Amino acid sequence: MYDTGVTWIAGKADRLAGGATVVRMVWVLVLLVLLVGGVTWWRRETTARQVRELADARADAVRWYERLGGQVLGLRGDEPAVRQALSDAGERYNAAGGQLEQARSAKQYELARETALEGLAYVRAARVALGIDPGPELPPLAASRGAGSITREREVNVQGQVFRAGPQPGAGTPYYYPGGRYQGRPVPSGWYSTPWWKTGLAAGAGVVGGMLIADALFSPAFADPGYGYDAGYQEGFADGADGADAGDAGAAGDGGADYTDVGYGGGSDYSAADYSADSGFGAADSSDWSGGDWGGGGDFGGGDWGGGDFGGGDF
Image (cartoon, rainbow, N blue to C red; front, side, top):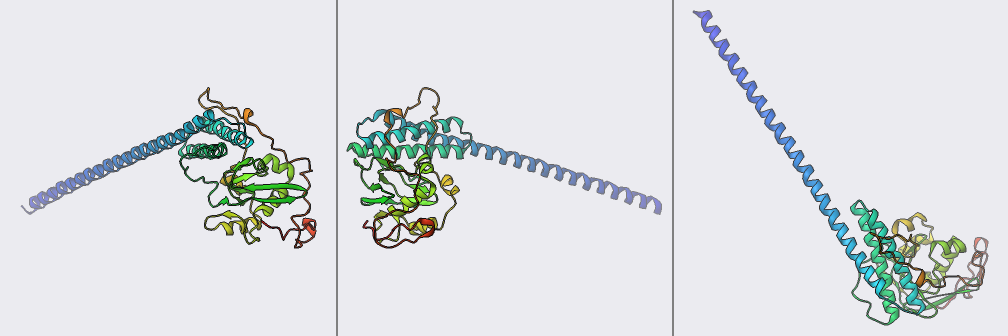
């Protein structure tokens, strides 16, 4: 009798233990299903969000690109400043088209958008040179952030060559620059007599040559440098004077860089040849920048800079 009761109790316990195991297995399966379902939902939502972001970035870039195309193809002018600004805008139009055609990520579409906006900055400059309304303000360019703009005309002499800059286009300042960095140094937006910031011309003049021109035009040592700047611009000049890495200029984007002539989607290629302007440095030898007179006055020092006079110029 006693053995029978023990056997019955043991069997009951085994059945209860087996039922508990089944319940645990069911809960484990439920949790696994929920986990797999949650991961699947999260991945689908992430993919859908990325698709939406990519579509939004593409639509934004295409919008600015098409606006640039309409302006570039619709504006004409014979003045050197107009022709040069439209030539630069046309280069950006072609470059933005190539970037759009090859873009596969939101970041690449943002770069195409930036190129199109840069082209529109040149279009605004061309409209100013034509004497017509420049149109609505553009979103700020990433490359020109903190660079400021020229507020008054100035003229300097470097190695016998005269370089001018001013806030308005003129016969002596036909080259527009939307603002950016040259060798890590901020260069404000405005009109210049020579596009000394461009890679090819800078290579011909030497890296130091371009820096000397920037020093002469925008050195913060002068009491009235004649440029408007954002917060931190003065510090940016100091950083550039200390010798910034040349790679910074490429990372930030160069408003004056040359672009490859690439069409977008076929049939929309814009030729900049019709608007080409004389971009030479003049008859003087632009490859020799060792010293020279910067306007008389204080002694800048000898040694590496050739002992040329630097200070005392009236800007």
